[in-house]
Image 1 (spheres, rainbow, N blue to C red):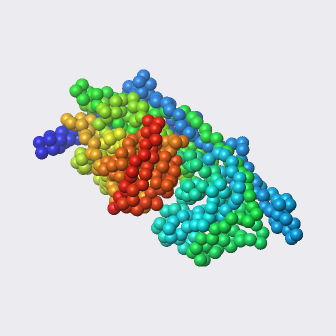
Image 2 (image 1 turned 30 degrees about the vertical axis):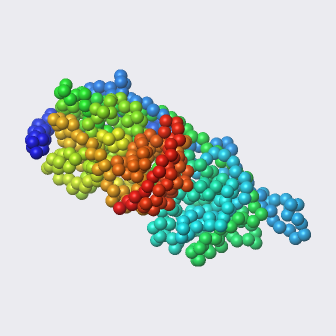
Image 3 (image 1 turned 180 degrees about the vertical axis):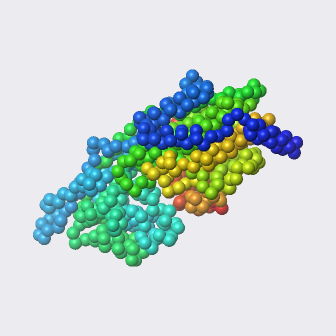
Length: 605
């Protein structure tokens, strides 16, 4: 109680001093910085591009002009490499050999009819395909789903075969929660791979879009799929079904009508195919500046205020634009708004320092899988043990109806009182989420047991589209958000004692259960930086099945039950098979050695 009274009194003093500080968040400064970052000159700020490098240089110059000290040794930038894209390689081909029966002529004497698919016209590899070749029989496997209730692979031997499956679900399965979770392309690819297929070809359902190929690009959640994966237009796919046999249309119609699988080997048909993709690498950088603390007794500790500055450039695989024509994705709200907020707060703290040191970080590579923040926590420029808290600002420029979302409140018992005090008089309608993990850079810090606060003003229809432009920014609203963040950060930086990370309270189980749609919980925190050996994990939730089994941060999961794990999609497919109480073997790579352990799953609820 004494500490609580002291903290409240101290917070009151801090807020009063804040009201008298010489510099407050200014909407005009914020708007101008967003306008610059979201200008055509910066070209959407994709990492390892001219626009991305211009953004890096701009933020560095802003930090220098504000008098910040370099935060990466003697430099303001912390370079790192990342996979920036995927291109088609030289060896891509598909050729079918169809043997048409002729009366009186033995099959071995019949020359095959050769049917080829033209890349970019008839078909295209997926960005996550494995490079390699395959040849053998061709199997139509319906919708590519395998469950106890409905199994397109039942009775079918697809080992070494090339499998053709229809994308999506039959109409009757759309309302089946279990089947709906299995319709993802990556899930179907994992199933085919685990059944022994050498390759999988996806064809669209009958309809207006049946001959449309999806956007080609890298999958940021794992490029290593373990199987050759192609997409094919409906028309050329239908042509390789042998004459006088079941057609693609009849097979699809039958499944839809009977609600039963209809899988078969394409009679007298073989295929030879090659797939080749080449990944491009580039260099980008985090930008880091420091405002030293004023109290020598605690100045060695620090508070991080961060946000990512990268965006989608001309529209990468994460674009939600309906147009396939490249266009600048300006990213004014995502996340020029957060970047401008980092610079604005750096200016404010530079003019009025706190007791503890403030470290301002502009991350790159967030849109590629939180790569910049993960690189920093793995290669910290300041001792991680001295980090008191991390404030993350991502999409804070479109405040509407005064609604402010704050995530990570479960990572410290102190957050609730700090939020209540910091929002005083600002008129916000605040919603909170306990989970310290999520699709932004604070997750990297949660995994290192650092209290986090993620500030966010909400999604909108311009998200990941070229229409996310600076003219739609609510600059006055963002200035109010920054006032809130400054108050909260200053309290943490000036408080007599540092925040304590609350172990096990960093996740809102109910919310995660509903969002993931799984029956069981595992408890690992995936590291979305791709690893060719399997799925690397950045942390394990306390008390979870993974924790009890002995999994640790930096383990690389390679097998869970009967499913080989190469990426997050494989993990989800493996978990979909499990029921509460099931015990399965899990294999991980730890210190370059395979380690096996038993995992017993528990219910999500």
